[in-house]
Image (cartoon, rainbow, N blue to C red; front, side):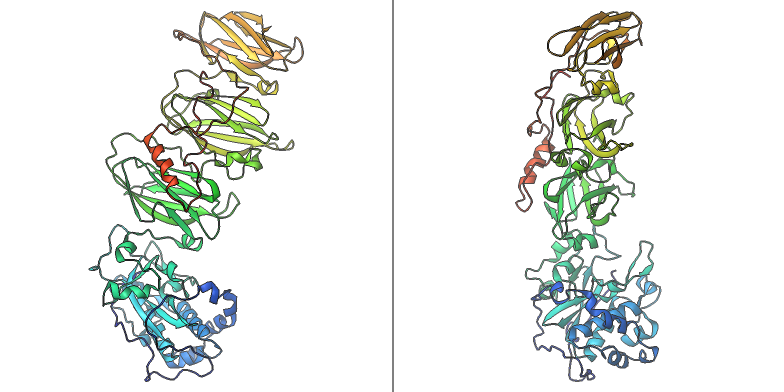
Length: 639
């Protein structure tokens, strides 16, 4: 929570001969060694389950008011059923956390806090010092070695952009107690509840601050006694203590980040600086992450989420890319989900500050999406397992042929959209072809920037509605120099048709045009327009072709029709005439019967090169590409 100035005597919290005698029915492990050393075991080793404290906790919560009048009387009652020093520590923690509320008025300076134990018992209010004083007194009465630690905390009043130095006044107090042969942390203030963003105390008991392990405690507690940083370092109880500068620069992990074992690369410092983009990789070591989402805020708190992109990598690793749109400070908040259910809750993991420096060019925004791009469970939607890490793609010339591997037991549809601009007749900028366990999406991009291609699937004959299967991200460096594809129909795919030429929807008026399609199923085909119709002749294996002169008026429709039954025609493709001058070369769609998933092509932009190198610099993380399955147009260049 963070209290005000916390300055206490460094040495007065150990039991002495003048303390009142502790009850005799619980064995206490005494020590003459007042020097702090790291605990030999973790909390989970000495407390396999909190259920073992069920009776002790119930006893602590049912103390009669008659014994609450003085600390000695209260302590004598509390330790009654205790058989171990661990039980004594537990009963003190539970009683204090459930009975003492945080003194918000004293925290905000509306009154002077009264931190002596008797005043805390009388008012049932305290700031951190009062909580610590009361716990320390209980331990002295019970002859438990303990002390109060003062220092810096990353609680309610913490401002990560303000560095902590040796001159910074400490703001918090907590305890250490010697139990089960080791020094252990006790944080009653935070165990009692929390401060809301509105500055109100929310009473909410938690066990997480009872004997927290040192590697977790250092996330938001740094002991800084009056003797200075170096003499205080052993009270971190770490084998390798950190400096105040390191503590100040580190990002604070939220509870889920701590509990799930969050690991961040390239570093866990709060501040990242860039003139281009920042790439942060994260994973968890206790439970695997199922998804990660990010939100970006500017200095005024406005969301800028279109400049955050999350990729799913191998072995439950996620990469977050941030492109600051301006030369200013942003806050990046990351959230994670460990539930495999798609509607599972997300929890706060960590916040970072992203400093944009010398951002001189317009930054193309990503399509807005919370969560990782791609698909978490490909086979559920009829996609091949290899599609799990196929999340983002790249086009340098506004065209792309994207192979989508399938399991062969699903029906698919799709939707293309641009991050900033509306695309009229967007469905005409994608045309698909099917081979065995492969769907090829030929795409053209009318604008520069980022696109989303959404895939939808039906995996069973009784399924009436398409499921949203995946969102794939495409970056286009340059708008296509060719227009949309012709419209297609249900029969197009049913008859396994492939359009060979012409390769665009809009055809010049009054111009001879050759139409060629391929299908192993058709028995007849024709081209029809307002000017008349013409049968298509067989030409080569499975090919049908015809040449006609387009109508003289613009906006006239031209259709290709065909059927596996002679003289029964169904719509396959639809074109329209336009008035502008025809291009020097009509487009032709290449034969894709030999199409293969492209290998990892070298990235064309500096930022992608940096991203790829950066990934391999961390041996702790599984090796792999930073931008998976990036497809260029080298596969089919004339679409």
